[in-house]
Image (cartoon, rainbow, N blue to C red):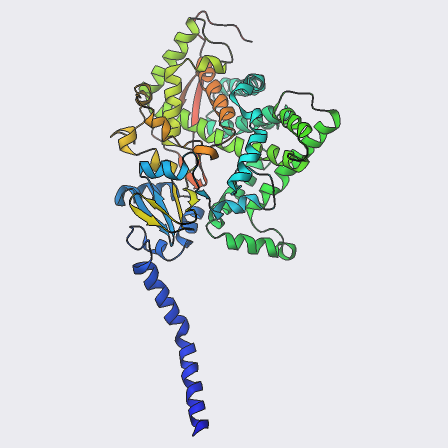
Length: 506
């Protein structure tokens, strides 16, 4: 009898174990859909169950448009993962990203850091980030730009020599590609006093694809960082299989070579590398050699793509809106006639050009470089956001493409390119929610350099060339893999003589 009961118990246990996975899965699905703290939030069905929805669209490259569509459909709060929420509520944005916020970066950023100890962008510990940023902030400050400006002028002159050649040959110019070559060579000049030579060659050496591969892989695998950690663990056996590895690969090796060469001959130039060496010499324990190489390579990775994206956006929206282009050209010509412009135009001169400034802000509003949510972790103890409690460890964030189209900030025509809105701003709300370079303490450290490159190039370009789209009816292609890259900006150029008067070339 005991033996019979024992066998019956064993059979029952086998049956229970057989169905246990199904029961557990069903229970988990019911919890995520109906019992989770996020169960009442709208959003795509699959997002309630797994981050694979985010990974799929991150890989596909349409997350920026998907997020705008969902917020347009469901409002200011949507569920984009089992415990991930995208928010466009104004008060919540201040809570998450404002001064003194306890919301740290999520583990999405961990795939960018790898084993690097000094890396501002992905560093998740706010105390560590603050200390590191204070060490290196001086070379990127507005006060340092005057010394860096001649390096930008050098790159502009090379760029315009190439444009002259193509204009004489009546070529249709892939301005999107040439802007990328310009941005890359300029960051080389500014950082190392050495162009990469891409504009001279008319092409790159594979670096663009390398960065793109890194962006694509980081965008999707960051949604499931445990996969990245597994890849790192298996890399000694299977080798590197992810494009994100290039962030720690050949581009870093290039930066390391330049740093080593500068160390051998001494820090003799007022470029960014020279200024970073000054920090290293002053505080070698806090800012060691590896940290110096890390900052130099970060300049290449972050400083080229984001600037090129922004310049493309300014040119594209200007050409798609002829009236805005006319006003901008008139402003450039008027400043030239009054002797208020140099050639190349200086940063100080551009700051006095209201329509130029408004046009740049407006283009970057409609096409910010980053098209994914900037994810932050709810701190210990949880937090109430927009009247709803979010438990500690959940992930919240805003998407720049969504925030930049909030009508109560930017007007009922927020989807329209209209630079004039920036010239009539009264209370600073539009600037307060301008996320093109991030927000708060984590704002991009290189934003001043990027702004200088754009500010100088656009008016100098309009001073020398009449520019128009090769096909006025064509639209470009956008792909969002963290950065929203564009393809299809083809233009025709025609040389134009600057108006009479003006300041001679410096």
